[in-house]
Length: 329
Image (cartoon, rainbow, N blue to C red; front, top):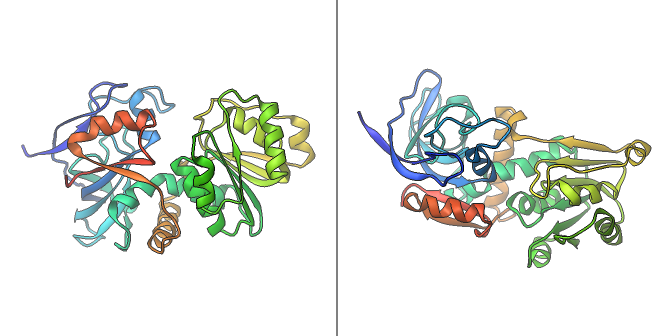
């Protein structure tokens, strides 16, 4: 039986190790893709922890909820085509993208132009899709609106600062905890910045937000917790807060009177709710803007043999941007 090299999560809560996996075989409606690069994302870390709302995955399995690769066999896409693809690794039975080859539903493949480096496109990936579609589709961003991006120093936030402007926002503010985040937001064209503090109370942070932003029409929130609680107080009438993460805490609170008097909306977002067409449209826009130099995120590249190190450093927040595994190394 032929095998391929892959990252393997042998036990939930532990970094993956490099091992061998039976070479996958494509069935009807499936493509065989040779993986070029695959990022390590917060969703990968969450699923492999065994504590996600998807439940504990069966081990061993190959992690990687997305990747960039080259088609080796398919009925609807020519062999040799460069593609981006998602997987359900850790969320459903089956292997993910951090393997030399992977089987993907042909309907999920997004054909790429090749104008953007594979490593950069992998770093953008689902995080960029989330930022792009959470603003545009879920948040309903309209031209001229005021946008506050919480967690603006993360990959989702970094994309959101740029995407909000590309989608027509009139004013964009960042908000983050990390040192250097203020300058990073300014470098990306943010109009202002709210410094978050680890010991913030909702009241103190809300006051700082009001002093900086006044009111906003749309909040992109990958944090939840105290930052979201404070941001809800600066939503203008008919404003929307779109939550797509909880890295600052699992819950936020709001005033019923404040929400109803606007009226204002609190909305949840998940990439899993997107259709293949919506993912493809978002990725096409992301690739176009990245190729033109209008959209970028930082990333660090590791070989497959370094997957354990990359995983540990990404989980500890020690990677600048996104850790990307290059299967060619």
